[in-house]
Length: 289
DNA sequence: CGTATTGTTTTGCC
DNA sequence: GGGCAAAACAATAC
Image (cartoon, rainbow, N blue to C red; front, top):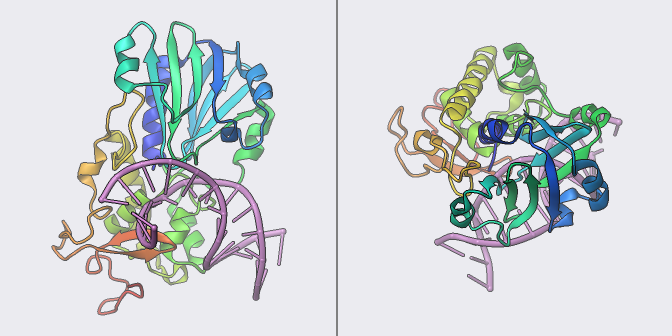
């Protein structure tokens, strides 16, 4: 589940290793990854171009080329690996490309970039420079950016009819959070994910704002969360899975108050929270099983 | 073999 | 036309 911290970790790793390289070839074994865009079209625009920079927008990875950008979304199980031809041990260690490697770039200097995705929820798209704005226009602000303000978060939550969890997962409100970090941020802020948006108060929204930024910053610092599939481009695990407070900890003790972490379905997602620390009302009950 | 897993798009309702 | 809920997608682990 690559969310903002995982994609940012991949971006940083790629940036130092593929910038300035020329794309010599592109292989696409699952054209469906392009969601309708033509393989020949993408090839003609990408091959022989140079990688100028590696950027990120929300959970999207952006390879900036001379003419246009290559946008990669990792879906749920997407992985990006970089291997050197010179160091064959890397390719052997990764056993790449394998049957789940659906997209590859051959780069100058004997490097290869592999996009592996077992569940095939991932996507690749080539955009002309002028198409970039429209492609991302529905996304809300970057949670770690200056545009993201606590008053905006408060108003956004307050005006929604859904529960808090659904609001925070909504990429139009704030872009980059997924299931893991929403649960973690709610716990850090001591707010229930089941809280109806319209019932949030300013104090809770400010707390959430700080929690979202702090959780994401810390997760970036620890190079992401490796619960199952996530690996960085060198096949290393992240470190944040050891620091999770609620996600994946159902039935275990809350590290803040000692009560048992609950798990239920909220906004159609597996959701973890401490019903004591994250009580909606003092003395009240959670609405969800 | 049924269930659970989740990010985004699509569909359909209000 | 927008907000919202639910389905669809897809493969693997258990």
